Image (spheres, rainbow, N blue to C red):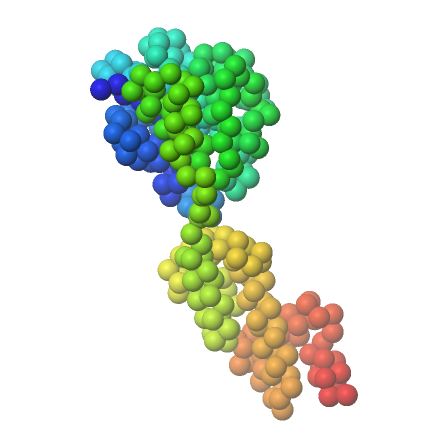
Length: 304
């Protein structure tokens, strides 16, 4: 059976990258070989961090599988540095696969730049001439000029899925034109947006919790720990759902709670104690920072 060697980054959320390639290729009855160029720490909210595999190790991975399996198709995805690019080019020249497809990742699904201008220029000069087709998203199509360009929509993972499908069909010894046409027919035109129910549920839990417990803590880490997530992930969720940081939501809830208590007969010192401020002065400074007036002035205005 002809095999496709996918050379790209990992996607721990499974929406693209090596994981999605293997799923697509094997799901179509093909044989998938894989080489990882970059480890990404990511989820549906974006990429947390990267670790680029040293170029020497990328080349050794390719050597290991190419010598043993003679891949029919090289499907290339995420490349983040010139050293990795040069290693891949050496392997293309060395092993001469029947087909070379390139599905560049210029931007992540959350608009993070994945390639430098220098790398893009070098890819155009050195890699594109070795490719039989370049499969790009609409927004990335102006970065590369190829003899055969296939444009996919901008949905996360769609370009990758289209390229993997074409690669698998080429392994069945279809022509490139037929493989492209059939791949586009096989993929549904309506792509469901990423499921955000996890984000909504977590956001709702956070807002409900800190509304009830704002007396206990004003710290993002407190709520993140209670929700069993990192402060960074909680921040990504609140920014995605409400375009606000967790701290700003906490502060706003706390501010409203102070305003509510200022309408009672409690002293400002009592309110400060109840809401876990270190002192009355601390509460007053917090309140004035957001309202430009002191709690005493707010109370006077409220009772006019």
